[in-house]
Length: 141
Length: 309
Image (cartoon, rainbow over all chains, first blue to last red; front, side):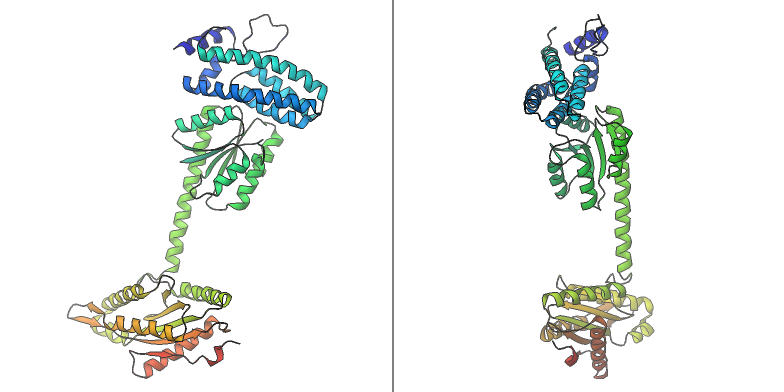
């Protein structure tokens, strides 16, 4: 199966996503092997999950952006919490860590820090999205 | 078995639903706490629930509290599923009524076995409820006739009197007794006497309206409660019952046993200050008069002291 092949190939290179700045290893943004295991090898389910993520996560990013622009850190915190859940379920661990940091910054009402993390999260989200799209389309990244 | 899952995060919700369906559960899905609460009010709602903690509207912990406040039986087994993972969070979740706690992202096998634990507890609970209902049924019924027993019919009389008072309605009470029952026992034996009681009970039951109650008050003595009946109606009911019983043929070894019964009728009119013992006493006196007057007849109690204030 093509996805399994991709997943196995990826798992061989990257066990877990990490954001370590010192790492010179190629960094994957989604743990494919973990995700493949999570969906129990069900490609249709994987497509569903990715579809839901692609539909909903842009709204969450917009919510975070708007909330921070309005100084509403708690609303940003909530959206970050939901985003963290999606990313964790999709084994996008680095993205989930960023969402967690944003959640905590929001809870601490630290708007500047939250804004900086949001920028990083938006970049990470773009990478996660393209990896997920590639995975479900069976294309190499 | 049905499981309700409540999670506002769509990826998690879909993943959870898919896993549960794969394990053979029937999944009911809610996107937030309020929707979950609504679904739990429906008849045949799931008793096994997996809740996300942070949800808009009503969060998982509030929902736990609400479920515990609203639903004592049947028991709802609640698993909180959340990214919150500190000891304080776990304590808070369990203190507010959750039965179990699992952190996100869930590990499939762990969730599977925890659901099995919930299912096992719910099955035990169901067995206990069934056993309790059966015991309650036994405790309230007369073993021989399957009518209400003395305690149950007296309890029912208190309740019906309360209801009649609240609704300003009248209530009829009929006390009746099989005539010469001792002679039946002496002639045909106690087993035949039991058969007569069973046959009489069945005949009595067949004459009842859905909201009437009848119970075995003593050996061959019965109490019949007739909600909403004035004196004329109550006497009519008693008269019909007298006829039904007098037409009863109970097969015995040598021949057929025939029975008759005597009836005392007492009625608490609308607004009457009657209590159960006063009404029973009045019906009993009327029954005594029916016996004295030759049996197989209906007598109405004089209720001057129970006329409305």
